[in-house]
Amino acid sequence: MSQKELGRARILALVAAGHVSVAEASESMGVSQRQAGRLLSRFKAAGAAGLTHGNRGRPAPNRLLAKTRQRILGLVKSKYVGFNDTHLCEVLAEREKISLGRETLRALLRSEGIGPKRKRRGRLHRRRREPRPCRGMMVQWDGSWHPWIGPEHPKWTLMAAVDDADGKVESAFFTASETSAAYLRLLEGVVRRSGIPQSIYQDRHGALRRNDGYWSLEEQLAGEQTPTQVGQALGELGIEPIFARSAQGKGRIERFFGVAQDRLVAELHSRGIVEMGQANAYLGSEWLADFNRRFGRAALKPELAYRSMRGLDLRRILSFRYQRTVSNDNVVVLGDVEIQVPPGPRRRSYAKARVDVRQHLDGGWSVYYQGQKVAEHEVTALSEPQRVRVKTRRSRPAKGADEAVLVYFPALDLDAQPTAVAIR
Image (cartoon, rainbow, N blue to C red; front, side, top):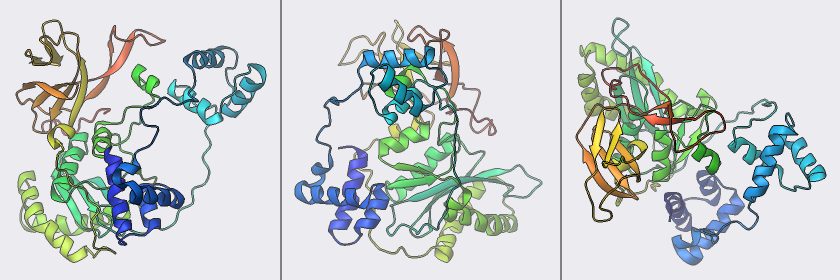
């Protein structure tokens, strides 16, 4: 079972015990109440195993054939340039005898980087969102760049995560800037303190959501962009990312920052704290506990929706990820980091093997092949991956012979270069 299915099993167990209503469970799982009722029936009949889809592992019978796919793309780029999605769907059925749904056509065009003819965005309707009834159903997190120790000193970023049910802080610390590494550390603090939440409410910061229009060859074949480094960690933990469209949507975390910019600034000044290490020590030992005591409130229901992290390799999940090919001399190269891959029990030589390289939050490196660790490397400066175009023979895009890949630049030390933020 996936982490998402395990999370649903946890919520449905609360429903079956009478602690959570079907309506609350449907909102937490992101499905309709009718679908939540179906899932509950399957859960009662077969337990957690009943939540897995019966068609898992089977090819879709109505999938679009590769030959038809290529024909449609050829027509779009030559004969039907400038047609909108609905118009194109109609002419393909009428003139080319290719019948497919509009959403299928839309997904195909977007996967190939062909955008809509024009964008339309209606007026948004906003309404108050009630807090989740149980702790662990939703966590809100964000970063606040502010002169925390006075206008005469450099600004810091306060990273914080607040539980939506009771408004209490799960994890918080000062750092130089709002980066992917900061969010991964924040996620580690939440998971180690309380467990894995069901969802995280967040803004559209570049560390959390891909804001570039580039589609690699693998992403085009998969039909979706690879998430950011933080997004991949959330997916592996089965945490649903929910993106806010306004600051008002993140009311809990915004109110926390409002209180912190008022009270915490005054407390730091009164204690003469001007170093980040001292500020983090005071934050963790005194101020956060005082904030939770003063401003936290009891959740509507006492049951917990946090899931245990037992059995998960958190150090591997919360890391920076690179895909690389092992050289002929069994070395993986990332910038000035060269990792020698020794012979292992599964293969004597890993030359030409595609491996998953991870830099952990402590700066150490690990190389994984098909899920198994095959090599390690000593600690180096922790630096966020940057998307850079390089020459490659592995794929040949339609235009040019280069491809954007994630690379490691050791010069961008997150502590020494706090303002350096790259595409993740």
